[in-house]
Structure formats: structure tokens, C-alpha cells
Image (spheres, rainbow, N blue to C red):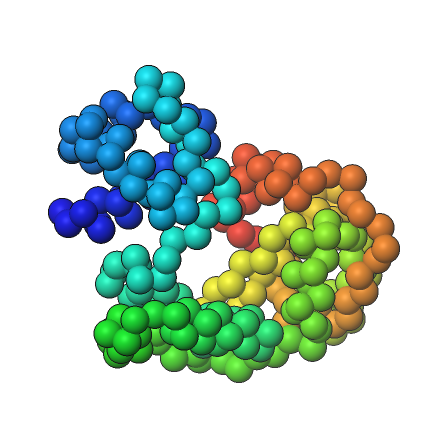
Length: 233
């Protein structure tokens, strides 16, 4: 392991701990001496990493420190490129544009050799079998999720000609290869429900915040096993 790789591994290890972690634990995890840990932490601090702590007490990396792009490994760059390509193929138009913009920002600050390596990766994404069929603004759906706002939808279930109106609390979006699923708490059914976004005929974001936090809804949804078997009506 080179020194640069060791420093990167140390940073990533600190990122995984929200509470102070001792130098001895860091040394054992990285397979290096305690003295080397102290020296590497001092080096990272000198480079701008906001690491709080001292020997014998423990260390914690405060939020906000960004890794220099040149410290991305080749595998990490491949993972990023594969993710960008998937979003570009299967996400909605706004996310596709956002992914393209983010990729351009990363490419702009990468060293030339790593930029070529990322752009030339042969990790590919399969083709879509259907075109986008949503008539609603997916950006509005994501905005409602972020702000924990109720939405009113008109939904045409499978095999139905008419649509019915519902008020739901949206908390998650599932992106699959050929379909997108909105997970929400339905006020009318008093239960979790899943809605295919291409079957939502109308959507209105209400100026009402739903009474539970998004994270709490997600936790309850998972506890109910709804993330294991998704039923779409």
C-alpha cells in the first residue's frame, strides 16, 4: 500500500465513525503501527482535513471535508461512471441532465490520465425496453419528498379506465429498469401504498407538511417488509 493509498484509507475509515475512534483501532484496521497513524493524521491535518482529537482520546473527522478528486481510485471512478451511465439511461430527464452536469464537474478537475481512464471504461448499461411514459413532473415528486409535503394524485390502477383521487405522503422513489415506483402513505387506505409513476394521471403538491418525518416513514415501511415485496395496484 502506497502512502497516498494509506492516507485515503485512513480518511475513509474515519468517515465511517461518527464518534471518536482510538488510534489503536485505526492502526489495527489498517495494519500499520500506532506511530504511523499519528504521523498520517498529522499529515492529513496539515493538508486541510478537519480531524479533531489527540493521542489517547480518539479522533473524529468533522463533516464538510472533501477528498481531492485525484485521490479517487480506478475502481471508484469506474463505479461513478457506471452510475452516471445508468442514470442517463433509466432516470427521468431532469436527473439525466443533473448526472451529465455532475460528470462534467468531476471530469474538469481530474488529472488527464484519470479522466481518460474514466471516459474509456467499458462497464456498460443495458438498453431500455420502453420509453418514458410519465405525464407528471418527476422533479415535483422529488421536491415533495425532500420537503415532506403531501401531494394529491389521480391514479389509474392496472386495468382501470377511470382514475381515483388520493392524498398521499410521498417518502421514496424506486428506479427500476423500465418502471418507477412511488412509495407513499395513503390517507384514504391508512396504509403504505406503491404507485407506478406512469399511471399517475395528475399530481398536485399541497402546501401541507405530513405529520411524520420521511425517515420515520421509511423505517416503518421497511419494518413492515414493504421493501422486500412491492405490490403495485
